Image 1 (spheres, rainbow, N blue to C red):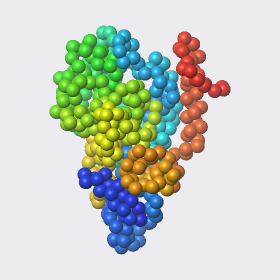
Image 2 (cartoon, one colour):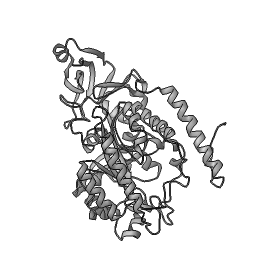
Image 3 (cartoon, helix red, strand yellow):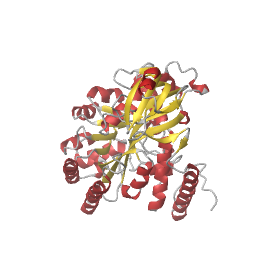
Image 4 (cartoon, rainbow, N blue to C red):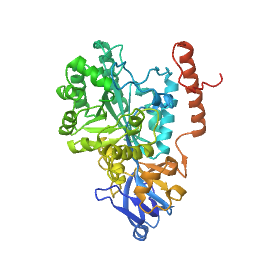
Length: 464
């Protein structure tokens, strides 16, 4: 049996249904689970031989669940944020006018690990990663100690990207390859990492998948007992493409194919009608709102309407950044601006979206909030910072003013993967240096091969 670990004399933000906050409290952990929490004197008396961590001047929170990201896309950091597609016709398709540079499998693994490093540093404990070819870096991600839902992608529209106008060019070989990748990935990786890794599946987007492929993915999801995810109503070009292809709205298309369920995480949902929101809610779909990238694209999901319709709202980062502290604050700010309400949503609402709701959506109802018996996935926040002083209302203070650099420690499954500000599962200096070299070389190769591509202002490729 492993030793008991105990954080004492701290503030514990439970994120339970009552929003309970415990002051001068302690939390005990053993074998990946929370054993007890309560007044320090009581917990210390119960576990006198525990390994102790002084929590004075700190707060313990549940770790963040990032319910939608593409880790290796940090390659486009500082580029794609400012190159969003038009929100009005004529639509061109794709998420940026610049193609993403190609990477070797080893290079993609390094970039994915860079994203994982940023995720850990910002207090993330659970990540849903959606991509094609996850087998190339699943093991490396598992070694970081993060809890993972890895969703391999399938599609069967050829020679197109999301939001591309024009005919749907069906390629059955694409469908077969995607279905095979999903089945093989699930067989190889599901349950690995001492159970921290869950294998799911993804339909890329409604305008990238035929009805036949969607039906086969629904069947495969049932056979595997897996979670599923999809990009939905991400950009207005996607909505136009589905209407052109199918004569219905994207959510109507997915509903007709039997895709919608409480085992689906629909990412984005920011370019949709109230009718579509009601369809999602009636099916109990979880929505991964990605407020930071949405704000950068000049868009916003209607969180209040989605919740009222019955959707479970969760938060993700999507592309180019993995900072969930920024995401939580941006979600609250964007929704307050959209509602023209300076009080709602509350910081506590935003925290629940990013913790308890995210864990529930990803099939872990006993995580994302702190209670005896729950999974020991938690973070330690240093409140002894000028911008967090005085922390009179700790949740409000952290959501409004907190920074990723305030995260001092991260625990997943009862194991510290970051402690005293140092990530324990990655060689941070070496990884950062390697990723910087890879990214510059990749973009340099792209522009050398494609001199016709316009370079964004201020673009620095560096020396050879």
